Image (cartoon, rainbow, N blue to C red):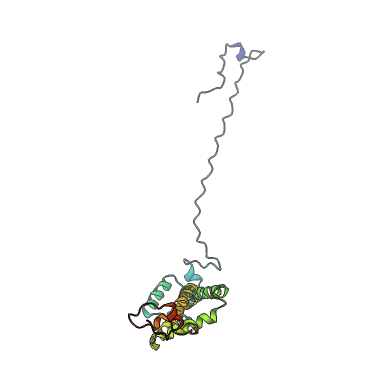
Length: 234
């Protein structure tokens, strides 16, 4: 950096002397103080925070679990559930690796069995809901609802008319198991088929047909023969 201070005048320079002729003593500027460097802060050592009470993360599970990891897990299973020995060993190793106590392991077992039971019940629930829906449709149907007792009687008569009691029993059992006996379309179709094979209502007779009384090869009768059947033909 260049020096910006004024040069000292020479002794013979009028500006270098006072009015009485004495030399002026130049005043030197005070040196500027250098800024002091701030001391560098020492890096703080990372402190290991102690786990807080209630922190149940898997990392701190071993230290915070009051019960601790048991020597052997003992789980309670709902009725109908049984833990296979091979699966039990796999669960034991898995839970130990997670540092789970028996109480926390039981929570996971309860969650699993509950969801598994819901999955097993779902198909049966859907079946029962479908049966109820079909029955409600039959009762509300203007054709089937009013004639339901008659339909049951006609269908039962048709099944018994097969002439095979074992087949009739197995057929009824199949309808009960599958629920087909409650399906409106099945009932409507089977009822119409049953009407075709079961005996109909009584029909009153009106005597034999005249045409059926002719001898083989006999030609058509005349009007007189129709009026007088015993009249010999000419």
